[in-house]
Length: 424
Ligand code: ADP
Image (cartoon, rainbow, N blue to C red; front, side, top):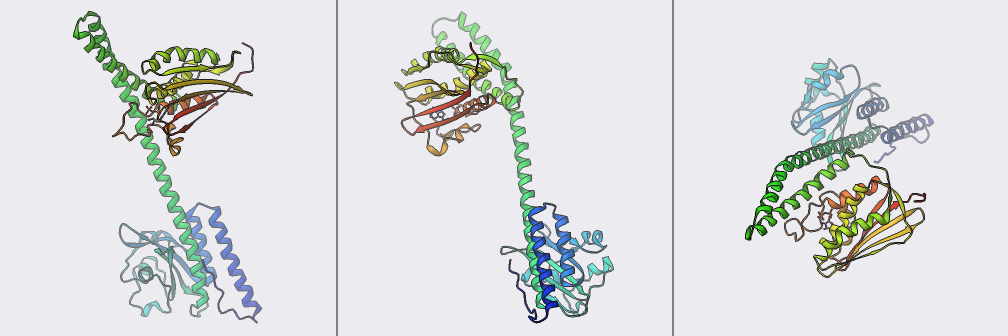
């Protein structure tokens, strides 16, 4: 914003004092811009200050309504505000419209002799416009409206200093309006996002619930038939059962995340020994790794490490890490679990020699439904929820989880949990 002090007579101290006062008022408005988000209050202050500084009877701000292509009153001094709010000012055949289109300040010393004057406003408000100074409201190069000062009180014509003062006020107003619009559109986008999030959560809980019952029927009957079957039928039914349990795992993941996120599932506060948890996981995952000719190595200190938490949920979180380690590591790969005691915390790291994760994806993989591979060209199954669940569980336990990786060489998922200072 450029504020030029023009025409001040250097030897007239009165004039100089007035100019300084004007500048002080403008600075005060600038400060107000940063301290209030109430747009209408801000615009009211801007126009009343504008009227006062330029020495006019009234002032108003007209903004462009993008839908109708007409100007409307966003703020006005005086008692006719309510009537003014209802009035639309056309771009063609109005002084405000001319300023809007030309983006130039305009002085009209006598509106009665100006064909562009739109008489509709005065008729509705009973206000008699005689002279007028208007400046465009510019946001960068875009014009969003017009600031007008009406009827110079001292009877003198509008001068260049008035144009500069009003232009400075207009740029304040333009910034305030633009800020308010940005805040409003952010708020709206935020609301839309939370609504979508709510819909998604609802959808997941309905879908997982509705899928569970028919799946149980498939599983029940397939197991029953498997017991009776012989010959080729046996392997066919094994395939059905494997498919059904994969589906079951997917539904479990969906339900788990929803429950965790909504805080619907209570966190148990059991005393747990880390080594026992890991041993349980090792027992479950050793055969699954072996099925891919992968070796599983566990390294933990002998002294029991105590933590407080929910056994089932922690097993779920670490199972997800091990599931990924097995899934994203080729045959003959190596998977390691390390337990390290630090001061006040325990670190549990799951390392693999798999495909690795690109550097710029290392934090995003913890987002819900996020997968590094494109879903159209994916080689590995999964919903992209395993790590989101693991993160939620670990954070509920006041812990931290993050990933480190070298692409093509392997990944390490590190979990830190607070330890309990008690003897077992
Ligand atoms: P899912 O495994 O079901 O796709 P996750 O949330 O468990 O979902 O993991 C998200 C993504 O992170 C995976 O799709 C994969 O791209 C990447 N990822 C996770 N763990 C590993 C790993 N050990 N090695 C390589 N990539 C991994």
